[in-house]
Length: 626
Image (cartoon, rainbow, N blue to C red; front, side, top):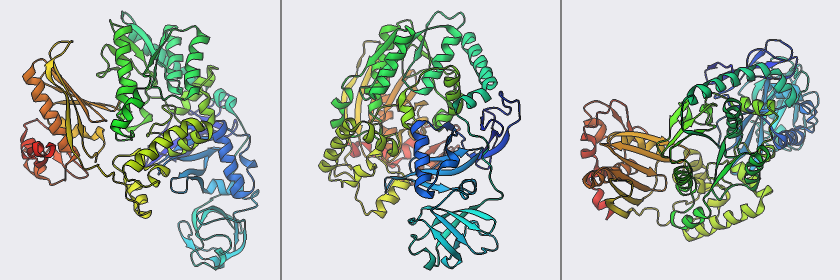
């Protein structure tokens, strides 16, 4: 997707003649060159689907009494930073507004932009302020109510407003409700001023979007097909496709089928899938006559949740039992000689996938090599390709879910959880009741569930501020305990060598991905976002640390297994209990350590071990565990 990042902005292109987003610079339908416009980084634009479009129209209707200027258009969402769901709304080649889900109020809110105000001004019947001459530079200023001549609408504080002053149109936010706004010294805040009257161009839909980008999609397909064929050529291992029921795995399969022909599908049914997802995966395989390997986790989640508590963004213990376990067993059983699996991983999905390569060995699943033909694609390119190919997709996307996964996943947005309440009240009620029972047992207030605090073990700043504002106590009654439960000491394992397993239970203050810093002082470290596992290699042995605190070590000898097990436990304690005293950083002879915002170890580390010996948490780890 042609784009240029600068100062937190990403440049995109729009065809004003066809009224749609361009994924390249030129339009395949009319041949015209696209007009450049900007969105906020990272520029992961996606089309608004059926219910997403309806949501936007309803919010504009509610705020301004009219949504007609946006009707009949293919809208696009661009994900931006925020407390929960935060999407820029793109129409007519400009950002109209930002859509935000308010965690505390549990409702959607619009933040109007200048182009949106200009487009809506001739049509709006509410949330409009007609003012006298504002004078000077007003962008970013709070203005008094005495400049208002007329206020239309029954708006509340923080609601979006259109400000009209002579020939000037601005986007603003109310600082007081409608019945008091003319009396307040700070009545409204001007967010942005329109530089000219905005023309959104002709309406268009999905067909126009695909037609305008047909040549761009053809080139993307050719490159991916060529790469897949060149990698697989001459290889004797079976080629399979990972098929989760999401858009990315769908597009990846379509590319793989174009390059290599039909292939077997692997679907890990976690036991927590939406029924729509299971139906789509099974239906897709049946319609195409494909062999589907459904690796079923059964009730693995519910057997473990009482022991580990609710999973969290920084405590995804469920990935081991519900994903990794079935996948590892299935690959070993079905493909003893190994398999090359086509997956839909994309670099723009998350920070941890930014360095996704086309070919990658999966260190967490034996005998599997992963091929990532979508690694450089955007969400808009994925959807355009699916529509270009005329393929059916999971209907949950039309219901305004941005991602498809386990229905109770803590990494999902709170707005998606609200959507689940509406669409699947039975699934929602079952998990909600479990969370409330857990909260009551731990002495936590109802707000722990109501406002989604359960989705973190270590609350991020936004949630800490919210808890403080609400005067909430959110530390479980037993959260300060630290214990090591050894499941199996160093002993011979069936695959050869020796293995050891344990579960370390302790307060989680930092996310597992960042623990690679303390483990880097021991050996080579890798992290998998999909399974939330850190993998450490040391002297021919390996240690896996899971988000649930599980530790699994395999080494050639009993002595090395015990050594690596001990070092791994110390590394985990060291990182989670780091109080940023700075002793390790001051004593590092290579200057490879910093402790600002938590322990950080650079690639300059030569693993001399001096920092381990100086760490207070490591020195007293026997007493900490006692």
